[in-house]
Length: 115
Image (cartoon, rainbow, N blue to C red; front, side):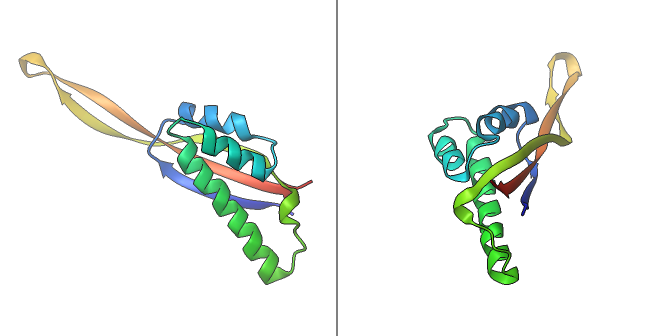
């Protein structure tokens, strides 16, 4: 039985998140959390939190609906990091000019499933 968790508007570019997501895709949840704890990239902390949230969703679903989910056999079925909205900032330049700076965000979705 699949369990999902979503993180919207993470203030980080999607390329940075995809690098971390590729490391944990198709791994058991316990291994994925170990990899994320040892990873030094900034995107690892929010993604680790999201995987823990998905695991908590599985526990809650199991308790409420008696779904029969074995929490030890869960693995990361899919994890996607998609581009979100971006905001704009203005950087003043010489001679009265200005440069626009884009601040990117991303949307992360994790799906856990049983083996």
